[in-house]
Image (cartoon, rainbow, N blue to C red; front, side):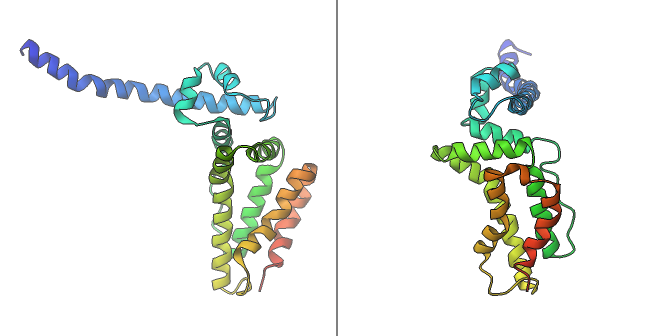
Length: 207
């Protein structure tokens, strides 16, 4: 093979080989960043947390973090979602009433303890930052609201819930008390509340 052909062959193969080698390293760094964020949040608030602290804990540069996330809120939200069990799917419900009970139960479980503190702090911080507010809504609130709205609409069609029910107001009615407790009385997001509230809440919208 001529020297020119060898150079052309190297030019064609080297980028691909580099990409293949780069992907595992990138994923390893990303995983380290998420683990570092969750670890730091056990000992400090969202307000105290910084990109610099995350980078130091994960042993990466700040530019590596900004490669994937635009700001601290986005890192924290992905770190929460990366925790074991957070993204696990719910069991298949037998009807829409049971679906909403499961959704509310999962929300209460998620907000109980350290994660609830983090969510409350994110919510508070997002009020002063439009970009953070959009990220918080897109990654946490919107998926939750969409899932509950879908179950309500399906329940109305199957006559489980009142046909005259305003779906958006129903979401507020179902989820509002949970967030009220989170922001005002987080200690009351306990096992007793989780066992009783979802079923009582669904009765308020039942046909």
